[in-house]
Length: 459
Image 1 (tube, rainbow, N blue to C red):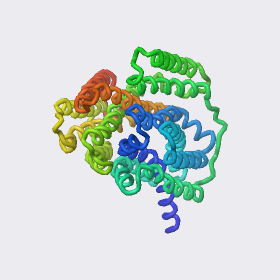
Image 2 (cartoon, helix red, strand yellow):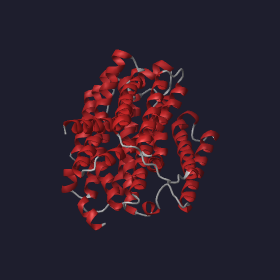
Image 3 (cartoon, helix red, strand yellow):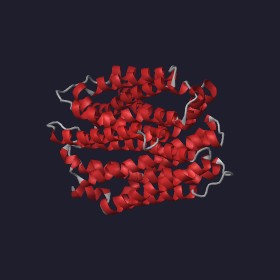
Image 4 (cartoon, rainbow, N blue to C red):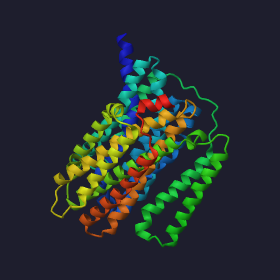
């Protein structure tokens, strides 16, 4: 009995390392941006690609991740995903140029897209007891939140004592440990004959890539540049083609009942806007702390701690909030809290310190956390057993693309301020507050005034 409990703990820990690797790489790299800037003599646009190359590939492949797990089995997919992730991480640390770093960050995104859904599926398959399964999945979610909180400080410590390469090397021992445990304890994979819609996937990857290039490089080339106009046109054509091809496919990437459900579409839009303002702000604050306030990587990581800790705390308490308030109320409340945080930044002066930015950072972080868990649950409440995987993949893809767009757009706005980063941060805050206003309007007009449990009952 003791050995069985020990095996379950090891298996749960190894599976949780999947989401830890993914979330850690989201937050840990941000504090290393200044070190990467010095190492590669890179621009803000270059740094945006370090973040976006990972998130873009992760988002695009997320749409087909469920089919990949079904086709090749959760165990095989997890091991393959972690292997790609840790090999790409080592290649990131050894990258001779910023362009090779971007390429390997994209490979990390491939690994992340494979290991994230497969890690959760492994837990569902391993634990037959519903209570044990619920506890394991709760630990999986908590591990992701903790990784997000620990990432900035862990990154700062690693850079201070071991250099910036260590933020990528650290993934190797963590990933290797998870592979060893899963190989030994996970049941054999049961692949299916699920067909993958490669044509639709190709169109959406190309469309998202072109759109990311347009947003990221518009500041460098200018919006009237033939290059930007061409990539923008191609992006629109590719994504329109994806919608057309996928809607006619016998095996669509996004299930028809998901595309036709207005509540799911509304939740997807809110999820995209939440991640847009959150991850865009995290990227800009990382640059502002290190380039304008001249904080070290460790000091930057510590400066992020209040924001990340409150974000994780609000996420943890979301189940109580959802029992007290309606879906619409929680989303509007989150949007208004985030907006208030950005409004405070309107009044920033060159004399402000990092401590004076703690309050607005906490507000915008906790505001997005009021809305995101309830949007996730609303998507699941509206999806059937058959379409749950497609709905979840669609929602997570939108979230990731929200982060990509936020980094690109906020980086463009910051650059418009020239050398005056204080003014640039004010412009970012104005842009973010305007986007948050759209979030308010969608929440008010499109979200139901029902509590979450009533939505399940209603469905």
